[in-house]
Image (spheres, rainbow, N blue to C red):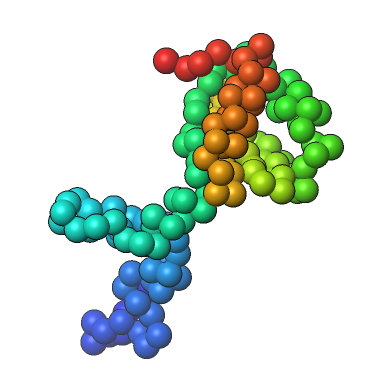
Length: 143
């Protein structure tokens, strides 16, 4: 942040950063903070709609015996059906009605699974269980 010699913020710059204020993360944090400050206030409609549009499993942590083998096996099983594959940060696959990401942490000894669907909670639960069954021979639930 640039501050002039008079101690004023340079024109066009915000002390909080305008890009951050517009981000979804910032909206969620502000919505959560408003819930903590005023718990009787109804949850913001935008946040509730967003949760309903993409129900998510949350991050499920598993211990992995061999992270590279785990990612390769999951990719081999699901890649043919995927509309998009991203391997920049673990493995993320997108399908017509759902998507998942599987990331490795701590040198490949832990895996984090996150599953989302397009408005279908039952599908999200089903695909989460299906993936956990695929992961189970290669990973153990973390404590």
